[in-house]
Structures are given as C-alpha cells and as structure tokens.
Length: 450
Image: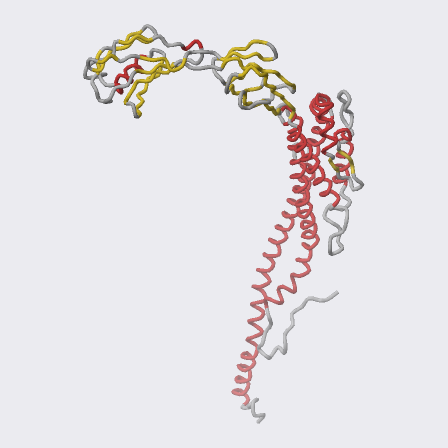
C-alpha cells in the first residue's frame, strides 16, 4: 500500500511543491470509493438499453397480433369481383359482406328526370311569361328575372324540386332543368308560357324518371340510383347498362391481407426471440452481454413459448401449425403461406374463432403479451425497468453525495496546502534575512566566510 505525502526538494530551495497534484494524490483513495458504484450504474444502464429494445419489440408484436384479434381487422375484410364490369362494376365489399356468389340481372338502369327548353339566339334576350314546374308557377319579373340566366336563378330560389341552369352551345342558349330527386320519384311536370319576344319557348324531356330494376339471386330489387348498396349486404356496385345476361358477383375473404398480418406477427415474434437470444452469449470483447443469465429474460422466453400452445380450439383449428406456423430450433417461427391460404379457404370461420373467440389462442396470447411488456403496473419489462430505475437513483445519490464530500475536502486541502507552500517558498528569503542580522551583530560575513 502506497503512502500519500508531499514531495518537494530541499526546504531551502524555495521551489515549494505542486499543490494540485498533491491534493489529487491525497483524495485518490476517497475517489476510488465511487468506482464500483459507477461500474454498477454503467451495467444497469446497459441493461436499460436492452430492456427498452425488448419492450419496443414486444409492443410491436402486441400491435401486430391485435390486427388479427380485431373484429374489424383483416379477417373481416372482403374482396369482390364482377363477371361483366361493363354492365355492373363492383365498388366495394365491406366487413359486413359474406363470402359467396350472387347472380344479378340488370333489367333497366336508373335515370334522373330532366327537361330542356328550346334555344334562343341571344342569351341577353328579354323574356316574358313563365313556367309551371310540379304545379308551382314561376313567372318572369321584368327587370329582375327577364333573361334565361336570371330566370334560372328565380327557379332555383323558388325551390320547386329541380335545379335550373343555362347551357350555351353552337345552337344557342337554352334552359336546363334537372330533378333534385333521383329515380321514379323525381318526375318533372312542366307547363310553359315563356316567350322570347313573339317566339314561344317550349320544353322537351331529356330523361324520364326511372328506377333501376334488378333481380338479385332471383329476387326483384329497385334502386332510385345506379349506385346500389342494399341488394347484397356489405356490397356496393354501380349499374352501368341494362343486359338480360346474368352477371356474377363473387365476394371472397381477403386472404392476402390476412397472410400479410400473420406474417407480421411471426416477424415481430422472431424479433423478440432474437432480442433474448442475443443476451445469452458474450460480446465481441468476450464479456457477458448486459442481461446474460437474466431470470427476467428466461421468464419472458418461457411465457412466450408456452403462449404458442395456449387457448381453446375453434372447430377444426386447435394449433398454430394448422395455420402454417412452425417452430425452429432457435425458437423462432416460420410461416408457410400456402398452408395458411389452404386453411383459410377450407376453415375460415374456425380460424376466425381460433384468433378472436373468448378464451381462444388469440385472446390467450394477447393476455400473455400484456403481462410481459412495458404495460404498467404488472408488465415484466416494466417492472424490471422500474427496479433498475430505483437502484440507479440510489447509486446516483451516493455518487452525488460522495462528490460533494470530496469537493469540500478538495477546497479545504487546497487552501491549507497553498498556505504551506507559500511558507516553504518563503524560507530562503527568511534565511537571508537571518544571515544579514547575524552579520550585522557579529561582523561575520556568511557569504565570504570571513
């Protein structure tokens, strides 16, 4: 054990000593007290980094699994197709749609009633008279509604069930009336006394009011518009033309979206397993990883592996292997999408139950994940992080207190040693003064020896 002291040359040299180096040397044993605390703090912080990554990956796994347990998730999504999109074009198949095939015959398409006036040569011509629309008269008022444009505004203001507009083309200018109600209920009745000078302005039917008439699976269905959303539950389609040839609408489950969601779960699960496996070895320098031998990691790994075999069966589905999911030697999973696709085609409702029923695999696995992640107050990673945080706070307090003690002693020692150093540096001058006094008293000159 070394001895801490003050090192300086001859007391009469006036050189003194290095105060800062001496203070550091004296306080070194006391500063060394912090070393194991700092080492422990560094180890805990390294663990925090691993726990944070593990918590993130567990959260991703939980979110990805949630898409399969969600009643409105990929398992509820549907796809649809039409055998003749020129007659009937499928717009959407919602979660409410049921997989199956439907036969639709488009007998007539819907149309919205419209009327148009005879043309006048000049849009600025002054008009007289008026029209009666659906039993309500709308008359020209000179100076206010006396051109086609202002008369159209008067019709719209009168709210008689139509929208009026002015159309100008190569043949002149005319008034257009379109019913505000689609289908048969929107028929327009019109009478006209409208005149352009001495010329009467008459009206011609553009389109008759009519409902679309379909047969859907041999049942009649009428629609006021050509956008049909009630004939097949959850399915919306557009009627584009009439045709007595039956059109097939096929609604299918969205296997691709489901397979993507299952693959996301497998990928996220493997990320968690790799997080854990990465701690079961030494790093590149030969030192154990931060959570090497951690009981928390072992517990999380065991719980995850057990969860793969938990939950109640649903019909013919009682294992993730029937979904094409297999376990590898390193604990990771592999998905065979062709096996999953086949299972979806043959046992879709059972797979849905296996993932979504109360007590099912999906619900059981979700409960397990909720007990392992960063969820307060009982998640395994959350509890480990809280324990580390408490220990780190105590270590930081100890280090802070020790630093304060050392700082106070450093200040005191520095002041004392500065004083001593000044005295040492003054010794040669003091000796010179003594020699001078001695010479004056004795007449002896110490410098010459005479």
